[in-house]
Image 1 (spheres, rainbow, N blue to C red):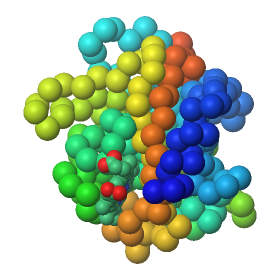
Image 2 (image 1 turned 90 degrees about the vertical axis):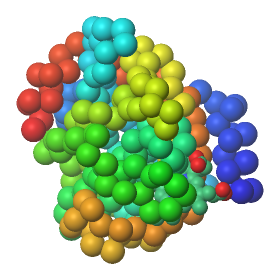
Image 3 (image 1 turned 90 degrees about the horizontal axis):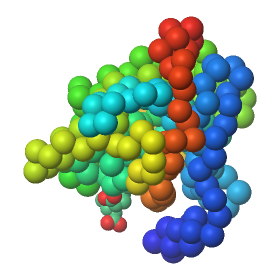
Image 4 (image 1 turned 135 degrees about the vertical axis):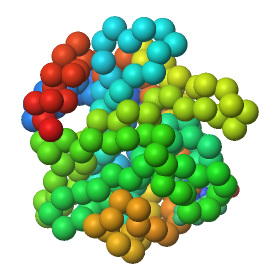
Length: 209
Ligand code: HEM
């Protein structure tokens, strides 16, 4: 709890989400570095298509990059643990895995078929110091909340997102339905999706598959 408060205060003081061009994949991402310890962070990057019609759902590309001491890192698209799409990622051998989850309560999230991921080969790997996964997601930026209300994240503005970090690793890292232990750190931020708008979104997805 002390950690959470410190990070929240730090988060309020600096501009956190920036536009980053990833030369490797060609995507422009909105990027946030989520601190899980002093001087250490998991990077969450999100790319969205241009010309998304209002009130229509849309695909996104998520890139998660983390030092190898991160056992798993997760993004909560609705800004909280329960009842929203969760993207959970971890290292596996020379690569990395992304898992679609949903938590109806504060316990191990279930797998979630409402969001489908296509892992992009370019941008997904592990080296000696960090692991990274890049994937197209259909179903991350819209979902039905518990009251059945359709939630669509703002593709041109700010959305409240949350993350979770665990030092301990999943029990079966090669499987995206593996169970994993609870997090040590969680936090929230406002993520400006307009920093990661891509007019050539579909072509870039195809190129990196
Ligand atoms: C084994 C899996 C997990 C367990 C057992 C678990 C358990 C819990 C519990 C008990 C809390 C409440 C803590 C408190 O009230 O202080 C909590 C909060 C939280 N968890 Fe998890 N969690 C798990 C996985 C995840 C994942 C995968 C994510 C995100 C991708 C996540 C995101 C959060 C966030 C953001 C909070 C802050 C409070 C909230 O938004 O509800 N958790 N978790």
